[in-house]
Amino acid sequence: DGSGRRVPVEAEDAMYAVVRLPDGGVGTIEATKIATGMQDELRFEIHGETGALRFNTMQPNWLEAYDLTAAASPTGGKQGWLAIDTAQRYPEPAVAFPGPKFTIGWLRAHVACLHNFLDAVGCGVPCEPGLEQGVYIERVMDAAKRSDRQDCWMAL
Image (tube, rainbow, N blue to C red):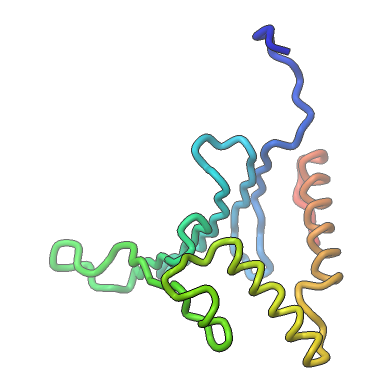
């Protein structure tokens, strides 16, 4: 209200979740609308025993990989994050539009979604993600909210 006083906030501006996967892996999920400096970022990181992968939609032409099995010597060896150029490595007909020098961006993602949908319709197969995946995502979000309210793990 401009007065400088603190007031209750009821909007879901941020969420954090710790998840256990069926194979025993543990992960974290974070989503926020209030992180300073994070334009329209969507980032994925996967860390394993022998390496890691990370992808950031703000740098869509690069996949970063870390290989812990790479030589660590002499002095650093070949260990470290490797940026793999993934720009425009699509099969026909996607290589023609937009041109290979352009970043992936929203247009590429939208055209790819349309292509996947039309290809599924043309081949007579279900398009994914579909209703079942949407319902599952709703179940996951509901379980996360219940887990927070009840302060316990929820099974899916």
